[in-house]
Image 1: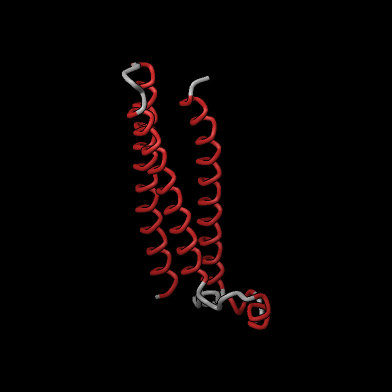
Image 2: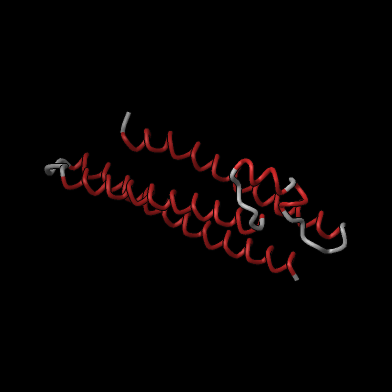
Length: 142
């Protein structure tokens, strides 16, 4: 089994998990937006979901839910960007240590290409997520 198939075996479940998490976060945002429209247009605050004393006891913040979700998504996508960069660096190290063996060079090139595609997908997801969250915040707060 080559390293590319091992990489693919790990990347596909991680990407699928990320897509599922992103989908659930977007669905949650949509549900809160619908709930705020049915209650007179005011957005739902965290104090309406749980009493403020609960947040103080557990050590949670009292910030806006939209801002908190946006921060979590940005942190996750930033971490995935670091992982993609690490994959590209790993491919570069494999290429440098190939010692002229063309099979190892081709494997390293495939790893670098996979890292570049992953980085492009992550950057696209970051741009789309930022646009969607900004649109949701604008739609629910005005």
